[in-house]
Amino acid sequence: MARLRIGSRGSQLALWQANHISELLRDQGHQVEIEIIKTTGDKITDVALANVGTKGMFTKEIEEALAARRVDLAVHSLKDLPTELPPGFELVAITTRVNPRDVFLSAKYAGVQALPKGARVGTSSLRRQAQLKVSRSDLEIHPLRGNVDTRVRKLEQGEYDAIILAAAGLTRLGKTELVKETLSEEFMCPAAGQGALGIEIRAGDIKMRSLLEFLDDAAARATTTCERTVLNKLGGGCQVPIGAFAEIRNGSLHVTAIVARPDGSTILRETQNGEDPVALGEQVGETLLQRGANRILEEVYGGAAAAPQQP
Image (cartoon, rainbow, N blue to C red):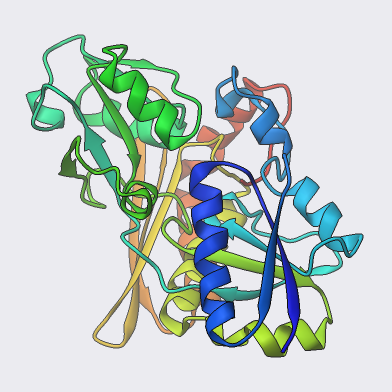
């Protein structure tokens, strides 16, 4: 059996994910090591993601280690992985997806609608901010960076009345005590790829491909490919208020995507069905652009130093 080296970020959640994949590989009889790699996104912790214009800020250094053969594979949160990988890499597997939705956490309030006027809500995601503002323009949105532990601790210490996080990370780390409400995709359309892990290798590495293909989940591959195609068509990432959520219903793909102004004053929503993930994602993205998404995105990009790509 093979000796495999995994490249991973060093956060508690990233290491949970790397160890989860390690266990599955060890079950196949392989020896596995994990190398912790600090990424640009890990180093920039005092700036909202919307103001950071670095492409692949959570993946670049890990890919450099992969290219240098210091590691054999990389484990990423799929939503952090650019929709177009740099030359020399391939996405060999997308793992079985856990709950892709966002959740509302609070020590005092039962849900979004229970928050009083002017309540402090923590999130550094323009996607979440914009969608919250659609129904609750009276809330005060404040930046929230750091790993899951740090964010939850800030809530517990009273810095915020509530925070919004991905259900997947909290579930994986067993930190769901303060989750009061799971937000529907109609209310809070998730980030493309949320809840799935992406396994990246060097392009053309036939040995690694054969060893790792068993990790690929067909349903997760189809739904996240559709979502990431929408995102790619719109040319945006977590710095831009874009959401995309796909699921398989009665054997067909059903996808909803949104583009919104950060202040929630305008939100475009498009829902379509189809069979081919890429064709459907392209169609939904193009429809949103024709409906005015391009103007919203130009405004958002115009307010930034650069027009960043995904994550």
